[in-house]
Amino acid sequence: MLSYQDARRALDAISTELMRRALAAVVTVADDHGELIALMRMDGAPLSSILIAANKAWTAARERKPSVDVGRAARHPETGFDIGNYGDPRYTGWGGGIPIVIGGAVVGAVAVSGVPEAVDMEMAALGVAAILEGAGASL
Image 1 (cartoon, rainbow, N blue to C red):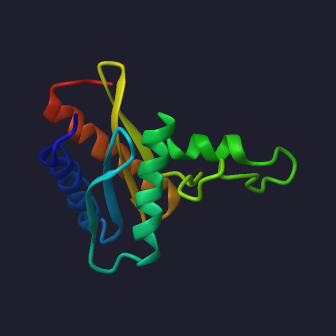
Image 2 (spheres, rainbow, N blue to C red; image 1 turned 90 degrees about the vertical axis):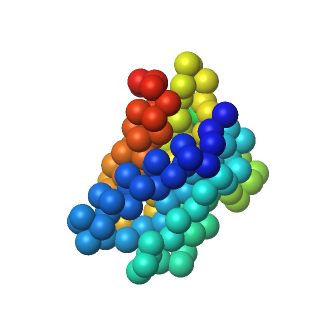
Image 3 (tube, one colour; image 1 turned 90 degrees about the horizontal axis):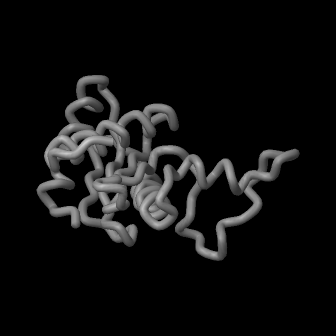
C-alpha cells in the first residue's frame, strides 16, 4: 500500500526536474483503486490539467497499464479517433499516467499533465522510479 511519504517522493522528484526545465504541471499519485493520495499543481500549470492528471492516474491504476496504452486500444484503426471511454468518463487515453508495480502487483499510479505528452510520460516515469527507489524495489 502506498503512503503519503511515497507520494511525496514522486512529487518532489518530478517538481524538481520540472522546475529545472522551467516547466509547470499537475502531478497526481493514486492508490491501487485510482483514488488520489496526493495532487500538486505547480505555479503556472493549466487548471484543466488538474482533472486530466487525476484521470490519467485513475486510468493507469484501474487498467494496470500506462494510460497511453489504454488510449491506443481505444482509437479507431482507420480514423484515429477515440471510440469510447468504457462507460466511464474518468478513463483517458492520453499519455502521462503510469502504474506503480511492486512485487508483480499494481499498488498505484503516478500521473502528470500540463506539459507536452512525451514530457508528461517522462515525468510520470521519474515519479514511479522515485517511489520504487524509496521502497527498495525495482521494475
